[in-house]
Length: 234
Image 1: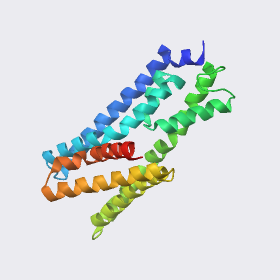
Image 2: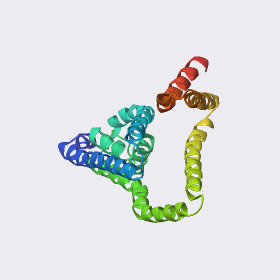
Image 3: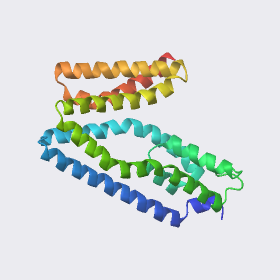
């Protein structure tokens, strides 16, 4: 049996599907708990539904890129492992790089000659151990971070400060991701600028005219406009 035959075997499908079921259960449970917490702090049902809808729409754009890369990953590590890793981590480029590096360390290429079940096992362990760091950190750090948040919000203007910290963190994350792409060249810089201008414009119009649904779709529209712009002008 070759490595790819084993990668698509029923045994791998069973374990991969079990993990995906667990991920779906966690997502549903977290959504239920977040709704309950929102009601406890006085957030209306309308705002809760709007938040859920906004999150769902916002997730569409990034998911498209992941799906495209995942399709190419299937031919390298098989269907079930791709489904499992993308379902848990959600970063197709990282998973692809980890799989390639682990196979190369054994002197073979993914899905190529010498890709045996043993090499596939090496790939699985590499990806799982490599993605365990953030899970372990979250498990141990979350209680302490919650205590810090509680103490900070109890102080005068604490909630205001938490808002600044949260906004700064979001700007840092998206700025880092965008900056990493912009240094690749002019087309990437042009795409980022168009996307930023589009997003700011949509949000300005939405706030000025009171169009709430436009806020929810602003990210998707910005992605679409930037892609169209770079296609026709670069």
